[in-house]
Figure (cartoon, rainbow, N blue to C red):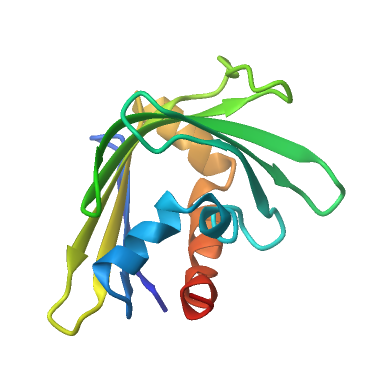
Length: 163
């Protein structure tokens, strides 16, 4: 399985997902840089994502929604803080209403994604979510973030195979 470990640290309010892919660094980077590839894996299988805006540059905005099995839509947004292609990406990640307005009742997290080449030609991708507090982390975990992210990332192999 591509996800090799998920580590949670309540004291530091972080969740880190470790994964490895049998693909070169540049191909792994495209999972984030190409909005069509991103939407093929960002939502869990039963909640596929649609990327609406995609400006992967510092101060850029990304907006998307996931559509559930009953047609319900769940909107989200990112503000891009830093991009060091193809090695590092830093985002602010939040929830939004159907008009894209940030939902201030739900926590905002900082997501840092790092990519490292492996000796076998593959890539290690590490996603670290930093929550504003332990309570915020527990709230988002109770919403199914850990399971949803693991299910979403389980689709990456098929995205890479189609490249």
